[in-house]
Amino acid sequence: MQFVEIEKNLGPEGRVAVVRFDRGDRINALSPQAMRELRAAAQSFEDDHATSVVVLTGNAYGFSAGFDLRDAEGAERGKLGLAARRAALMVGPRMCRAWYEMEQVTICAVEGHCVGGGAALAVSLDFRFCGRNAHFRIPEVELGMNMSWGSVPRILQLIGPARTKQAVILASDRISAPEAERWGLVERVTEDHEAFTAAFAFAERIAAQPPIPTMMTKTTVNRLAGALDDLASHMDRDQFALTNLSEDHAEGVAAFLGRRKPRFRGR
Image (cartoon, rainbow, N blue to C red; front, top):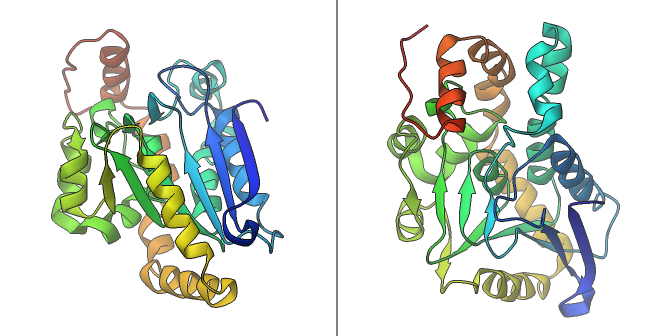
């Protein structure tokens, strides 16, 4: 893989694995290729009965700035017909679903920024640890889009309806690490550059438990908590495709790339 590295056989009885997503820059954006690699990384554990816990981390600068608006493959989506566009829009949701459906317990270690699609990926895991100066932001609405990838029900499970509306609608607002902990978006805030160490120590504690009932418990909780997720988010992709056709979306992206404040007109 070009952007993703997997290390296995760590921790108690070799039951911990680490997945590192690092594009070698400060942005660590989610290009379609990066998302395919992250999905493949999650799927690589499907027949891995030796691994009980997986820690996912970004790089020292940030977990991820979200979808790469400058990526050539992503930019070409706007030129596709509806059928091809709908197919192309499944890359992100499939990545998040692959991580959400893993039998292994999953822990996300976040330093720096965790934005948009990065936040969607983070909430697809079981636990989130972050450094004190980390922050979360969900900018999709400000870009004239809906928040998709099946993430709204997952955020709702963690922080409740009012906070979910606040986090998604007030797209310019950064959610600081202390705020994220108070809201229930993350489980623990560490000193900067110690999120991975803390996440790995937590992984070792879980890996020391009996693997089979641990996996069964995770699956049961996820099935109960997410029983209505598909019903709630089945239109994500089509809403995204529709909002991508709006003038507000074009304005939002242009403003983002031009580093200026957007002017939305509701059309």
